[in-house]
Image (cartoon, rainbow, N blue to C red):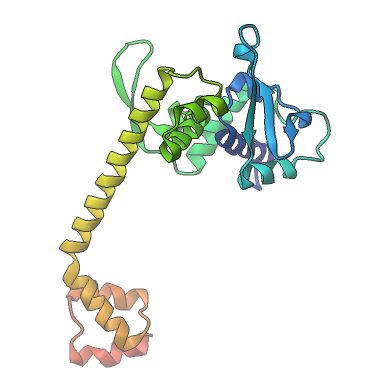
Length: 231
């Protein structure tokens, strides 16, 4: 993002957001004073009028590096460019698109109330950062109490059911990719063995040599000299 410095800042804010899991409404209130001894301390705005509780989130190495990167920027805000939630949401879509996160997901059209297929980056918003944090935390520790303490959710919140569903969905995707990869290797075992044996003989293969092997399935003796001259 060196060619788009503002998007570089929004990318860093988004990654930090994924590391701390706060609500968007809290994210835009953070100042440098909210970082205390390597932790993010804040009172969630959603709970200020009910039972105020300070949420303390330890910063991992990634979040700490981002905080340090912007430590000397002008102003009290934790990061620059934290002046528009709408612009932040639009930036997230651009960032994910540029990162190639275009997996097709099924979403409900708010106007027609019908399901439709959309690229992930088109439907992404700030909430995806909170979901990422909570989903990863729950996946690793399976401790609702810990997740509640670090995310500001009420214990027993229905949100945990959604994150368990996300966990199961990701497991299905990973298992599906494993099955596909295993099938591809099995179907191309002979070709892989041929390439491996050829590499043992020649040590390296050029693109032309590899294409020849794939196309012909073998390396005839009469062509070996020509192929060796190509290396």
